[in-house]
Image (cartoon, rainbow, N blue to C red; front, side, top):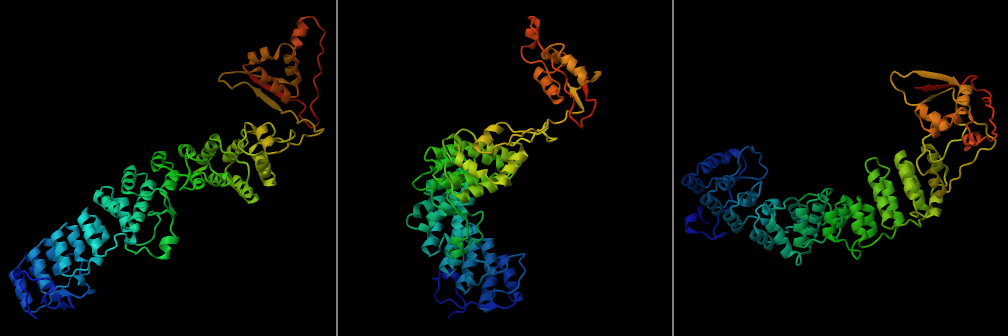
Length: 523
């Protein structure tokens, strides 16, 4: 075997090639690296004729500040003659710590790629990201023909998902997806990712390439595998999150993308889509095709989201839209009702009020289900806490209690009866009451109950209230709190017509009340 192969003789790859000469110390090839950087081909030829080492063994510690092999230097400087000289004289490209094919691909030197492959570079060591970054369909086909799985580790899906400018790669996947089912899977993964990122350009490219929006696809966002795994392990198939692009669009609330994906009741689980729906617009698009079948499961999902401060109003609004399009909750199992109850009890007071009022509206929910929902003491205590159930009149907080609107309707629909107090003494009147808004520089007039009694029986309440700057019903409410009777309806008309009318006496305050209840009014 010859000690030196002259590349000028156009040697055929693999013929009479001397064996690779490997050094164990970096210093043994330091001079060769200097000659390569200087481009001194004749000195390098003499080095080779002298049978001196050309490369160091794999695993030898080296400083990575600069290129660490003669072949890296030759590729980095673009010296085709030097690359051929080294390869023809036994340089083993597969002993390099990094695949020289990656360097050639990054430099977009297709001549180097061809040269390296002809002289034995292992195509299986190529970095698929570097290959895809060439935007060269011919290279994609060439490496695939060499037996490289371009879908390994979902590298193809990642490239399609993160680089919408790589049109040649989308076209390559489109041409080969029918003959290679793995590429169809990669397109589906990329489409689901673009939908999750709400990237309409990526969605259009994937649909053009043939991605299936209805097929479950692995989520790149939550995938924990390496980009160079073979993707055949059980963890890859079973333990990762897999949602279809249609499901992702519903979950993201992007009605425009969802409409483009065309939900199909024959292929999509519409109950799951309604559960994932996060906006009214998504609900409307789904309703054009089908209504949910398992209403209880859909409601339970949205009620669960209503327990979180971040999503409670969106979930309530989504539920409201479901009812508006005709969805009705008419049946559920005991377990589902128990779950509804837990979700209601975990929600905030404001969300609890809105949910109870929503479910009690119109015929949205079956009365039997609502009554089963409110039958436990915990739910009734919560209804009392938020004000649906009124406090008894003798409670000190009776007058200051906040009561939501439509409270009577809610209590009726949920089957909650408010016990009526029997022979309960009226609450003691307050010690003082202020009428009218406080104004600067106003003077204050104090009067006791008897003086107020005389005033309201001396002229109509409406006229007196106008004089004091408040409404007639407001003044009557104050008199009621102070247990001061007011003239009944028609009293002043009868008096003016000459009829005899009776005037009641001022009742004494209940036992335990202050002897003098002071009334304060600002003018």
